[in-house]
Length: 442
Length: 153
Image 1 (cartoon, helix red, strand yellow):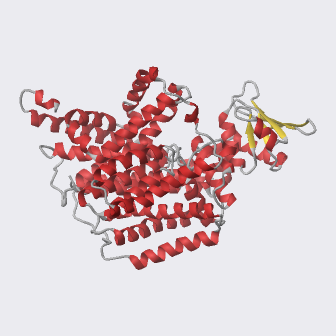
Image 2 (cartoon, rainbow over the protein chains, first blue to last red; image 1 turned 135 degrees about the horizontal axis):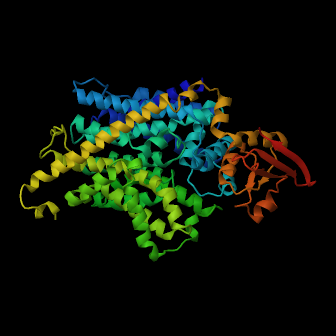
Image 3 (tube, chains in turn orange, purple; image 1 turned 180 degrees about the vertical axis):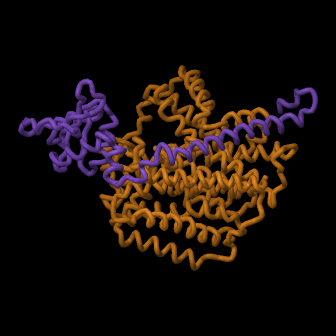
């Protein structure tokens, strides 16, 4: 009985979020883009609400959680505008149908896998789901769990999962794993909607399928490793990146506001989100020049979320990060580069994505480097390189145990960038029948 | 500067074909893996469809679930110290038993011992020759009474 309720809740997140988003965006957006980003908008509202209630000391109960959910759903129905594009089935070719079938099979596969098993990824149990259970049982965020479990992980996903537990009235960890599959679906929607902006349906479907079939992604979306937060973090990075790109091409401040909200909330998902936010701030300030008060006001909500978490960690007693015991070991540069490079050729995890990226880097490095989404991914990769130089743990063990998950954070951004570059190259001569897009953002 | 500039002729035509070739290999590989993944639902994982919650728990957590049951029965929510080198047992039990406090010899602090003294000490161990955790021993720390060895199977 719980499972259908979770499915209805998740569908509501997608639909209501897209209604809200269609109201605030200035132009008619792609249907899938609205669904994908809209899901994140609803998630951000929930996380912020949970955080604010925890901080002001109002216990999170089933009644107020339900009231919030119902209020947002009703408000979104009233706010729904004509801009929300009800999907129509366009005439598409056999190859496109085949790709759609493959993507649908993958979504069905990971969703079923996520509910077939109980949570079993040790990091998910040791950190994220434990945090959610603690937040649920304490009716809010409590510092005690950080000391008891000895971690300094941000509570974003813990708050979201705890919200679901509150709505469902119990720790339904099996059913809630479906939430992680929802992030997989949301990534697919955002990727499709964003790639479709500058290329044709076929190319968009190809790259979405290539993303959806990555084994590392599938594992975290439902098979074995559901409960890890790397895929949700990747989703927040992707949304922040593509929304910033939209701001660059349209100069509409609402995209700046949304992109900062996603980047700011990313810092509440995992510690790596803090590093991402700093790079994001740097890159976006360059896009915002000349700086004006109106633009600064639009980045404030995202900036506040980021700062609020940092202040919370700084002012109160908080379990220290393992990196606080580390120092830069430059002798590791070769070792770390070597093992990081090897991961790019792990075809069992990544298929050919990194090999394709390497070819892109050689062929059109200038174009690739000028792309915002790629800059964000590259900076993030460099940050991980520095983390391995800093780590107080055994560097080799640390790389073996975590680098695949860190790479997952930037995978959607890289897929988007690769699609962008492939379009640039393939439209010269190709069997993929590239046509110019309806609206070019390039 | 593009490397393609150094290619003698047809440089504009070469990269699209390299890209197409790699893309075709990538797509073919992904299609194969998608088929393989979906097939697992009907082969490797098909038995999971027919399990109830209790059977599923037993299937996924195995001996750890048996330990959890024994511990819940004996310790009745009191904190305990886990003596083992196996991190998996610790992390799984810490999650499954929460809010009951589980401390582990590998990361326990003096503050933990002072602030949250554990009432029980728990030793999971293997029966020689059997590569699974089949037995647990629980000691009441306040009376030093051995509460017995519980065999799981």
